[in-house]
Image 1 (cartoon, rainbow, N blue to C red):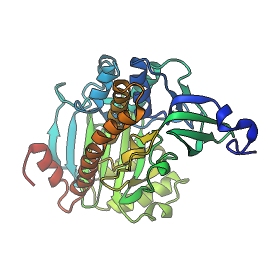
Image 2 (cartoon, rainbow, N blue to C red; image 1 turned 90 degrees about the vertical axis):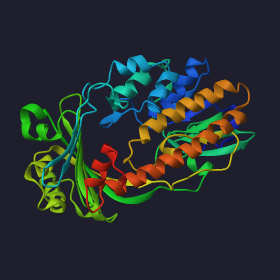
Image 3 (cartoon, rainbow, N blue to C red; image 1 turned 180 degrees about the horizontal axis):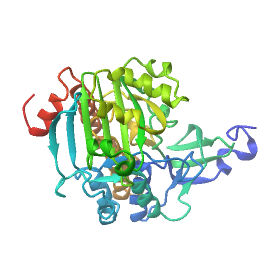
Image 4 (tube, rainbow, N blue to C red; image 1 turned 120 degrees about the horizontal axis):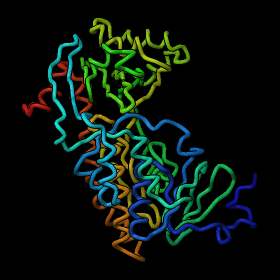
Amino acid sequence: MTNPSTNPATSPSTLPHHPVAVVGAGLGGLALARVLHVHGIPAAVFDLEDSPAARTQGGMLDIHDDSGQEALRAAGLHDEFLARVHAGGQETRVLDQFGSVRLEMTDDGTGGRPEIDRGELRDLLLDSLPEGTVRWGAKVTQARPLGGGRHEVMLADGSAFTTGLLVGADGAWSRIRPLLSPAQPAYTGVSFVEVNLLEADVRHPVSAGVVGGGMLFALGAGRGFLAHRETDGSLHVYVAVEAPEEWLDGIDFTDAEAAKEAVLKEFDGWDENLRALVTDADGPLVPRRIHALPIGHRWERIPGVTLLGDAAHLMSPFAGEGANLALLDGAELGLALAAHPGDTEAALAAYEERLFPRAEASAAGSADGAALLFRADAPQGLVDMFTGVEG
Protein backbone atom coordinates (compact mmCIF):
# COMPACT_ATOMS: atom_id res chain seq x y z
CA MET A 1 0.00 0.00 0.00
CA THR A 2 1.33 3.44 -0.88
CA ASN A 3 2.35 5.57 2.09
CA PRO A 4 -0.11 8.50 2.14
CA SER A 5 2.68 10.88 3.14
CA THR A 6 4.40 10.25 -0.23
CA ASN A 7 1.36 9.85 -2.43
CA PRO A 8 0.64 13.10 -4.34
CA ALA A 9 -3.07 12.26 -4.30
CA THR A 10 -3.02 12.37 -0.52
CA SER A 11 -0.50 15.11 0.21
CA PRO A 12 -0.72 16.79 3.62
CA SER A 13 -2.70 19.69 2.16
CA THR A 14 -5.52 17.36 1.10
CA LEU A 15 -5.67 15.13 4.17
CA PRO A 16 -8.39 15.42 6.81
CA HIS A 17 -7.39 17.97 9.44
CA HIS A 18 -8.17 17.94 13.17
CA PRO A 19 -7.27 21.04 15.21
CA VAL A 20 -6.71 18.80 18.28
CA ALA A 21 -5.85 15.11 17.88
CA VAL A 22 -5.45 12.86 20.91
CA VAL A 23 -3.81 9.47 20.40
CA GLY A 24 -5.15 7.04 23.00
CA ALA A 25 -8.59 6.66 24.58
CA GLY A 26 -7.37 5.78 28.05
CA LEU A 27 -8.34 7.76 31.12
CA GLY A 28 -5.97 10.64 30.40
CA GLY A 29 -6.93 11.10 26.77
CA LEU A 30 -10.62 10.94 27.60
CA ALA A 31 -10.23 13.41 30.47
CA LEU A 32 -8.57 15.84 28.06
CA ALA A 33 -11.32 15.41 25.48
CA ARG A 34 -14.01 15.89 28.13
CA VAL A 35 -12.51 19.09 29.61
CA LEU A 36 -12.06 20.49 26.12
CA HIS A 37 -15.70 19.64 25.35
CA VAL A 38 -16.84 21.43 28.53
CA HIS A 39 -15.05 24.52 27.21
CA GLY A 40 -16.46 24.22 23.70
CA ILE A 41 -13.26 22.95 22.07
CA PRO A 42 -13.68 19.86 19.85
CA ALA A 43 -11.09 17.09 19.85
CA ALA A 44 -10.66 13.91 17.87
CA VAL A 45 -9.47 10.86 19.81
CA PHE A 46 -7.84 7.90 18.02
CA ASP A 47 -7.56 4.48 19.64
CA LEU A 48 -6.16 1.22 18.30
CA GLU A 49 -8.87 -0.93 19.95
CA ASP A 50 -11.76 -1.96 17.71
CA SER A 51 -14.34 -0.83 20.26
CA PRO A 52 -14.58 0.25 23.91
CA ALA A 53 -15.45 -3.36 24.77
CA ALA A 54 -12.47 -4.89 22.95
CA ARG A 55 -10.72 -5.85 26.20
CA THR A 56 -11.22 -5.67 29.93
CA GLN A 57 -9.95 -2.49 31.55
CA GLY A 58 -8.19 -3.90 34.61
CA GLY A 59 -9.15 -3.82 38.26
CA MET A 60 -9.99 -1.26 40.90
CA LEU A 61 -8.49 2.21 41.08
CA ASP A 62 -8.22 4.44 44.11
CA ILE A 63 -8.91 7.97 42.92
CA HIS A 64 -7.08 10.56 44.99
CA ASP A 65 -8.82 13.68 46.22
CA ASP A 66 -5.96 15.99 45.22
CA SER A 67 -5.36 14.65 41.71
CA GLY A 68 -7.78 12.26 40.02
CA GLN A 69 -10.81 13.75 41.75
CA GLU A 70 -9.65 17.28 40.90
CA ALA A 71 -9.62 16.20 37.26
CA LEU A 72 -13.16 14.84 37.53
CA ARG A 73 -14.29 18.11 39.09
CA ALA A 74 -12.80 20.01 36.14
CA ALA A 75 -14.62 17.60 33.83
CA GLY A 76 -17.94 18.21 35.59
CA LEU A 77 -18.21 14.52 36.49
CA HIS A 78 -17.33 14.38 40.18
CA ASP A 79 -20.85 13.75 41.47
CA GLU A 80 -21.38 10.97 38.95
CA PHE A 81 -18.04 9.48 39.98
CA LEU A 82 -19.04 9.47 43.65
CA ALA A 83 -22.24 7.64 42.77
CA ARG A 84 -20.15 4.82 41.26
CA VAL A 85 -17.48 4.31 43.93
CA HIS A 86 -17.12 0.94 45.64
CA ALA A 87 -18.46 1.32 49.18
CA GLY A 88 -15.99 -0.21 51.60
CA GLY A 89 -13.28 -0.40 48.97
CA GLN A 90 -10.78 1.59 51.05
CA GLU A 91 -10.62 -1.19 53.64
CA THR A 92 -7.00 -2.35 53.87
CA ARG A 93 -5.36 -5.43 55.37
CA VAL A 94 -1.61 -5.99 55.74
CA LEU A 95 -0.38 -9.55 56.37
CA ASP A 96 3.04 -11.12 56.64
CA GLN A 97 4.06 -14.27 54.75
CA PHE A 98 2.81 -16.47 57.60
CA GLY A 99 -0.72 -15.09 57.31
CA SER A 100 -0.53 -13.01 60.50
CA VAL A 101 -2.52 -9.78 60.32
CA ARG A 102 -0.12 -6.92 60.94
CA LEU A 103 -2.57 -4.09 60.29
CA GLU A 104 -6.25 -3.75 59.49
CA MET A 105 -7.97 -0.50 58.54
CA THR A 106 -11.71 -0.20 57.97
CA ASP A 107 -13.40 2.05 55.43
CA ASP A 108 -15.72 4.48 57.21
CA GLY A 109 -16.42 6.47 54.06
CA THR A 110 -14.29 9.46 55.03
CA GLY A 111 -11.07 8.51 53.25
CA GLY A 112 -9.76 10.61 50.37
CA ARG A 113 -9.10 7.73 47.96
CA PRO A 114 -12.38 5.99 47.08
CA GLU A 115 -12.20 2.94 44.83
CA ILE A 116 -13.88 2.55 41.46
CA ASP A 117 -13.73 -0.08 38.77
CA ARG A 118 -11.45 1.15 35.96
CA GLY A 119 -13.98 0.11 33.33
CA GLU A 120 -16.76 2.07 35.03
CA LEU A 121 -14.61 5.17 35.21
CA ARG A 122 -13.67 4.87 31.56
CA ASP A 123 -17.34 4.42 30.62
CA LEU A 124 -18.23 7.53 32.63
CA LEU A 125 -15.76 9.56 30.60
CA LEU A 126 -16.73 7.99 27.28
CA ASP A 127 -20.43 8.58 27.84
CA SER A 128 -19.77 12.24 28.58
CA LEU A 129 -18.35 12.88 25.10
CA PRO A 130 -20.25 13.67 21.90
CA GLU A 131 -20.84 10.64 19.70
CA GLY A 132 -18.01 10.10 17.26
CA THR A 133 -15.34 11.81 19.37
CA VAL A 134 -13.39 8.55 19.61
CA ARG A 135 -12.32 6.89 16.37
CA TRP A 136 -12.00 3.19 17.20
CA GLY A 137 -9.75 0.80 15.28
CA ALA A 138 -7.40 3.68 14.46
CA LYS A 139 -3.90 2.43 15.23
CA VAL A 140 -1.25 5.11 14.86
CA THR A 141 1.94 3.82 13.25
CA GLN A 142 3.91 7.01 12.73
CA ALA A 143 3.80 10.79 13.09
CA ARG A 144 5.98 13.45 11.54
CA PRO A 145 6.26 17.23 11.84
CA LEU A 146 5.14 19.38 8.94
CA GLY A 147 6.39 22.70 10.32
CA GLY A 148 4.59 25.49 12.09
CA GLY A 149 3.43 23.15 14.87
CA ARG A 150 1.43 20.95 12.47
CA HIS A 151 1.89 17.18 12.29
CA GLU A 152 0.89 14.40 9.95
CA VAL A 153 -0.24 11.16 11.58
CA MET A 154 -0.31 7.83 9.72
CA LEU A 155 -2.63 4.94 10.64
CA ALA A 156 -2.23 1.21 10.17
CA ASP A 157 -5.00 1.09 7.54
CA GLY A 158 -2.98 3.38 5.27
CA SER A 159 -4.99 6.52 5.95
CA ALA A 160 -3.59 9.68 7.50
CA PHE A 161 -4.60 13.05 8.87
CA THR A 162 -3.02 16.31 9.93
CA THR A 163 -3.40 18.19 13.19
CA GLY A 164 -2.53 21.51 14.78
CA LEU A 165 -2.03 19.92 18.19
CA LEU A 166 -0.95 16.32 18.61
CA VAL A 167 -1.27 14.80 22.09
CA GLY A 168 0.33 11.46 22.87
CA ALA A 169 -1.90 9.74 25.41
CA ASP A 170 -0.94 6.33 24.07
CA GLY A 171 0.74 4.71 27.03
CA ALA A 172 4.05 3.09 27.83
CA TRP A 173 5.14 2.35 24.27
CA SER A 174 3.90 5.62 22.81
CA ARG A 175 4.22 6.23 19.07
CA ILE A 176 4.17 9.97 19.73
CA ARG A 177 6.93 10.15 22.37
CA PRO A 178 9.79 9.86 19.81
CA LEU A 179 8.78 13.27 18.43
CA LEU A 180 9.84 14.74 21.77
CA SER A 181 12.18 12.33 23.53
CA PRO A 182 14.36 9.27 22.85
CA ALA A 183 13.53 7.81 26.28
CA GLN A 184 12.20 4.25 26.46
CA PRO A 185 10.71 2.38 29.44
CA ALA A 186 13.10 0.10 31.33
CA TYR A 187 12.36 -2.97 33.43
CA THR A 188 12.11 -2.09 37.12
CA GLY A 189 13.14 -5.46 38.52
CA VAL A 190 9.61 -6.48 39.51
CA SER A 191 7.29 -8.81 37.60
CA PHE A 192 3.59 -9.42 38.17
CA VAL A 193 1.42 -12.44 37.50
CA GLU A 194 -2.26 -11.49 37.54
CA VAL A 195 -4.97 -13.95 38.58
CA ASN A 196 -8.69 -13.82 39.37
CA LEU A 197 -10.91 -15.73 41.76
CA LEU A 198 -14.52 -15.47 40.63
CA GLU A 199 -17.63 -15.30 42.84
CA ALA A 200 -15.28 -15.30 45.79
CA ASP A 201 -17.77 -15.32 48.65
CA VAL A 202 -19.45 -18.45 47.26
CA ARG A 203 -16.65 -20.29 45.45
CA HIS A 204 -13.59 -19.12 47.43
CA PRO A 205 -14.82 -18.09 50.90
CA VAL A 206 -11.45 -18.53 52.62
CA SER A 207 -9.70 -16.34 50.05
CA ALA A 208 -12.53 -13.82 50.28
CA GLY A 209 -11.92 -13.61 54.01
CA VAL A 210 -8.18 -13.22 53.55
CA VAL A 211 -8.57 -10.33 51.11
CA GLY A 212 -11.45 -8.66 52.98
CA GLY A 213 -13.64 -5.94 51.56
CA GLY A 214 -10.96 -3.83 49.93
CA MET A 215 -7.20 -4.14 49.46
CA LEU A 216 -4.79 -6.80 50.71
CA PHE A 217 -1.03 -6.50 51.03
CA ALA A 218 0.59 -9.83 51.98
CA LEU A 219 4.32 -9.18 51.87
CA GLY A 220 7.69 -10.77 52.38
CA ALA A 221 11.22 -10.01 51.26
CA GLY A 222 11.25 -9.45 47.52
CA ARG A 223 7.73 -10.72 46.86
CA GLY A 224 4.11 -10.58 47.86
CA PHE A 225 0.43 -10.75 47.00
CA LEU A 226 -1.39 -7.50 46.23
CA ALA A 227 -5.11 -8.15 45.92
CA HIS A 228 -8.40 -6.33 45.91
CA ARG A 229 -12.06 -7.14 45.87
CA GLU A 230 -13.87 -6.13 42.67
CA THR A 231 -17.38 -4.72 42.51
CA ASP A 232 -18.58 -7.96 40.87
CA GLY A 233 -17.51 -10.00 43.90
CA SER A 234 -14.35 -11.40 42.33
CA LEU A 235 -10.84 -11.08 43.71
CA HIS A 236 -8.11 -9.62 41.50
CA VAL A 237 -4.63 -10.63 42.62
CA TYR A 238 -1.23 -9.32 41.55
CA VAL A 239 1.48 -11.81 42.46
CA ALA A 240 4.62 -9.68 42.66
CA VAL A 241 8.17 -11.02 42.52
CA GLU A 242 11.51 -9.24 42.36
CA ALA A 243 13.10 -11.24 39.57
CA PRO A 244 15.34 -11.00 36.49
CA GLU A 245 13.59 -9.70 33.38
CA GLU A 246 13.66 -13.16 31.79
CA TRP A 247 11.96 -14.93 34.74
CA LEU A 248 8.53 -14.90 33.13
CA ASP A 249 9.96 -16.37 29.91
CA GLY A 250 10.63 -19.62 31.74
CA ILE A 251 6.96 -20.16 32.63
CA ASP A 252 4.48 -21.76 30.22
CA PHE A 253 1.41 -19.57 30.65
CA THR A 254 -0.57 -21.65 28.14
CA ASP A 255 -0.73 -24.35 30.86
CA ALA A 256 -2.47 -22.77 33.85
CA GLU A 257 -1.66 -25.55 36.31
CA ALA A 258 2.01 -25.64 35.34
CA ALA A 259 2.16 -21.86 35.55
CA LYS A 260 0.64 -21.90 39.04
CA GLU A 261 3.23 -24.45 40.17
CA ALA A 262 6.07 -22.35 38.76
CA VAL A 263 4.83 -19.15 40.38
CA LEU A 264 4.26 -20.80 43.74
CA LYS A 265 7.87 -21.99 43.84
CA GLU A 266 8.63 -18.36 44.69
CA PHE A 267 6.40 -18.68 47.78
CA ASP A 268 7.68 -21.87 49.42
CA GLY A 269 6.97 -21.73 53.13
CA TRP A 270 4.25 -19.11 52.84
CA ASP A 271 0.89 -19.51 54.53
CA GLU A 272 -1.31 -21.95 52.61
CA ASN A 273 -4.27 -19.55 52.60
CA LEU A 274 -2.08 -17.02 50.80
CA ARG A 275 -0.76 -19.59 48.35
CA ALA A 276 -4.40 -20.53 47.65
CA LEU A 277 -4.83 -17.14 45.98
CA VAL A 278 -2.86 -18.72 43.13
CA THR A 279 -3.76 -22.38 43.56
CA ASP A 280 -7.50 -21.73 43.36
CA ALA A 281 -7.38 -19.03 40.68
CA ASP A 282 -9.92 -19.21 37.86
CA GLY A 283 -8.92 -18.81 34.24
CA PRO A 284 -5.52 -17.98 32.79
CA LEU A 285 -2.58 -16.40 34.58
CA VAL A 286 -1.39 -13.18 32.95
CA PRO A 287 2.30 -12.20 33.11
CA ARG A 288 3.31 -8.54 33.31
CA ARG A 289 6.75 -7.02 33.59
CA ILE A 290 6.77 -3.67 35.37
CA HIS A 291 8.50 -0.95 33.37
CA ALA A 292 9.16 2.72 34.06
CA LEU A 293 10.54 5.76 32.30
CA PRO A 294 13.51 7.51 33.92
CA ILE A 295 12.55 9.52 37.00
CA GLY A 296 12.46 13.16 35.97
CA HIS A 297 11.76 12.42 32.29
CA ARG A 298 11.14 15.66 30.42
CA TRP A 299 11.66 17.20 26.99
CA GLU A 300 12.31 20.52 25.30
CA ARG A 301 9.26 22.42 24.09
CA ILE A 302 8.57 21.39 20.49
CA PRO A 303 5.71 23.20 18.73
CA GLY A 304 2.38 21.46 18.37
CA VAL A 305 2.96 18.26 20.33
CA THR A 306 2.94 17.06 23.94
CA LEU A 307 2.39 13.95 26.07
CA LEU A 308 0.29 12.94 29.03
CA GLY A 309 -0.11 9.95 31.33
CA ASP A 310 2.12 6.91 30.87
CA ALA A 311 3.42 8.28 27.58
CA ALA A 312 4.94 11.15 29.56
CA HIS A 313 5.88 9.55 32.89
CA LEU A 314 5.37 5.78 33.04
CA MET A 315 6.09 4.66 36.58
CA SER A 316 5.69 1.55 38.70
CA PRO A 317 2.28 1.16 40.36
CA PHE A 318 3.55 1.17 43.93
CA ALA A 319 2.27 4.63 44.86
CA GLY A 320 -1.09 4.34 43.11
CA GLU A 321 -0.35 7.46 41.07
CA GLY A 322 -0.50 6.37 37.42
CA ALA A 323 -4.22 6.66 36.68
CA ASN A 324 -4.57 9.69 38.92
CA LEU A 325 -1.79 11.56 37.16
CA ALA A 326 -3.17 10.64 33.74
CA LEU A 327 -6.54 12.11 34.70
CA LEU A 328 -4.94 15.24 36.12
CA ASP A 329 -2.64 15.64 33.11
CA GLY A 330 -5.61 15.48 30.75
CA ALA A 331 -7.68 17.93 32.77
CA GLU A 332 -4.85 20.42 33.24
CA LEU A 333 -3.92 20.33 29.56
CA GLY A 334 -7.55 20.96 28.66
CA LEU A 335 -7.78 23.85 31.12
CA ALA A 336 -4.52 25.34 29.81
CA LEU A 337 -5.79 25.23 26.23
CA ALA A 338 -9.06 26.84 27.28
CA ALA A 339 -7.15 29.57 29.15
CA HIS A 340 -4.95 30.41 26.13
CA PRO A 341 -7.33 30.56 23.15
CA GLY A 342 -5.42 30.89 19.93
CA ASP A 343 -2.02 30.39 21.60
CA THR A 344 -1.34 26.68 21.71
CA GLU A 345 2.34 27.13 22.56
CA ALA A 346 1.59 29.23 25.63
CA ALA A 347 -0.89 26.58 26.74
CA LEU A 348 1.61 23.75 26.27
CA ALA A 349 4.36 25.64 28.08
CA ALA A 350 2.05 26.31 31.04
CA TYR A 351 0.91 22.68 31.12
CA GLU A 352 4.42 21.22 30.97
CA GLU A 353 5.71 23.61 33.62
CA ARG A 354 3.35 21.95 36.10
CA LEU A 355 3.61 18.46 34.61
CA PHE A 356 7.34 17.90 34.94
CA PRO A 357 7.92 18.50 38.68
CA ARG A 358 4.69 16.72 39.61
CA ALA A 359 5.58 13.66 37.55
CA GLU A 360 9.14 13.57 38.88
CA ALA A 361 7.94 13.60 42.49
CA SER A 362 5.38 10.86 41.86
CA ALA A 363 7.83 8.67 39.95
CA ALA A 364 10.33 8.94 42.78
CA GLY A 365 7.58 8.07 45.25
CA SER A 366 6.60 5.04 43.19
CA ALA A 367 10.18 3.76 43.11
CA ASP A 368 10.47 4.31 46.86
CA GLY A 369 7.17 2.46 47.32
CA ALA A 370 8.51 -0.62 45.58
CA ALA A 371 11.59 -0.62 47.80
CA LEU A 372 9.43 -0.23 50.90
CA LEU A 373 6.95 -2.97 50.01
CA PHE A 374 9.50 -5.67 49.31
CA ARG A 375 12.35 -4.82 51.67
CA ALA A 376 13.94 -7.52 53.85
CA ASP A 377 11.67 -6.92 56.85
CA ALA A 378 8.43 -6.66 54.84
CA PRO A 379 5.69 -5.84 55.65
CA GLN A 380 7.13 -3.67 58.44
CA GLY A 381 7.85 -0.72 56.14
CA LEU A 382 4.26 -0.58 54.93
CA VAL A 383 2.90 -0.92 58.47
CA ASP A 384 5.13 1.93 59.59
CA MET A 385 3.98 4.09 56.68
CA PHE A 386 0.30 3.53 57.40
CA THR A 387 0.73 4.16 61.13
CA GLY A 388 2.94 7.21 60.73
CA VAL A 389 6.06 5.68 62.23
CA GLU A 390 9.26 7.30 60.96
CA GLY A 391 11.30 4.85 58.91
